[in-house]
Image (cartoon, rainbow, N blue to C red):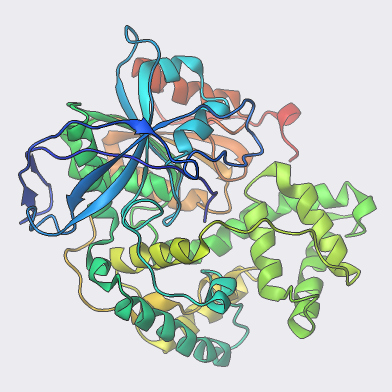
Length: 498
């Protein structure tokens, strides 16, 4: 789960040897022809934290192999963008960025970072590079031909209260998997993986003539960065992973952990709503928590103008990514509690491609349970442990019925390589809970140092208010210096609602 962004880019490759056995490729770098971004690609992204107008980017495109085992075979297009350093004497290299996903366009992300407080010394040190990963947006896109109804259901299953609910959802999940496997872009499915996106990143590095690549990625982007630096340790310069998935990426474990994230994060909203009785949701955190379950039950029985319990749980979870959205969550609850239509939600751009690309990556990256019975068992466990969301995130989805073909096994994150990874993590992150980040930290061993901020929300750098955490990341990107050991940054009460 993550935010939204958009733009377009380019080049062509170099001789490389990949760290996965039996996969290698040789090619010759070509020059990148930067030019103006298209009008649609240049559109400003609505980001609440933006402090200044977003700068204009340059865009290009790059051809890469569909299948890196056959580098001279079928090619696909990768769209890239650049926000160039204006200080050549201070420029260190390139900083490739990724806002998360999977399925989210990243072409506009360099401009969003620059407009949202990325320190000037970081902007001076690097050309910021964005990309639409393979399958997404202005890169060669994938589709599952999802209907409007399927798109409206979202990418997390409806809440399952019983084993029968799981069984009822299975045909819908199977239908989506079959659509993906028979759509006009089905030929891309086995190759739309995080490992191949990491290889695309290395093609971008080579095409730009850079010996090494620095990286700043958040949420799913943390896993993409972890995979890149595992596959290409000698080409990794300074690697920053923000809001971290576990070492398995967006696998079944990560999906189930979203329910843990909701439980970790929700007390902050309960305290906020209780402190604002004008919303009428309760005067104590316990009363606000009880209101959550009351509203979910009511909307299960009777949706309000099409807004049902699944929508209610989903929008509450999504908007707890940011303290700034807590008033909007409270207004949404207030409207639903009085049978009024909730505040409108801006449409997600290109939802069909987002969901199709998301399914392609998460289902293709790893094996998921394949029997209804196992999902029923998972729901029975998580519904008790994490009642707010566990009946949904543990339930069955298209990955249970995904085609068996896998080009390669998942990349195993480990401790081999230079000590050049800095992880940044909020303690109460709903989308990538702390427990998953701790697992990734252990997997990296001596390669990584982790900075943990005592705050809630999804995303630390540069959007978060914790000066200690932000300064640590800026220092690493600009000087290469990391904390001598894992760093715990205390809460800064004056800057947060919690």
